[in-house]
Image (tube, rainbow, N blue to C red; front, side, top):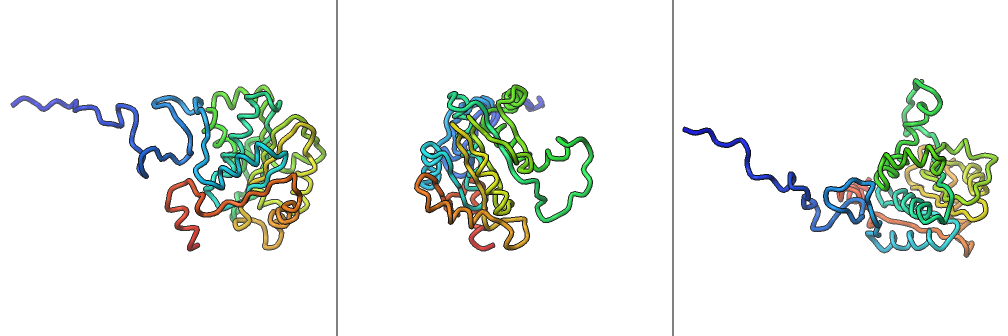
Length: 246
């Protein structure tokens, strides 16, 4: 008996495009993709909810925007996407991304390597968002040129950031004084976006200044404060369900 050929008909996965698990056209990043192309070819980011649309509009219209909401609502990704769009349109000369170097409830102890190697685990989420938006190769190129800078909050003191798009991520892990210091870094022709989830601070209770800062700045007409909810979660659908009971 002749052996059955080991080469079966190509599966849909081998042909290129696989239908998303959660309905036609659904994608966790909420972006338009071209089948089979690298992530560096992402064309346009689209809001997946009304609050995300409000956030994107606020970033476009205001020099300072605060985005508050639970994990998975796209706060960081939308802010970094807006920063990339502004850089590529020559509306700003550079992107500055910063977040506090705070351990999430456990001590990492001594980390080997130089200063950059020690800080890399804390800043990794910012690299991930950039890589998904424009691809790792272009990120490395722009960082080499100085067009993208990623640094911990401690490096921001004493600076004036002109002609820049600044994203302050995980601001719930900053004290009131730290956020105030960061806000005063805003220079001419610059845009700043502060993101965070007040309910997930890794600081001791009462130390996070994000909620208090947001409440005070919400009274200033020129500043936008956008509050996202569980309904805006774009990660795995279980995330939104878990957030309602945890």
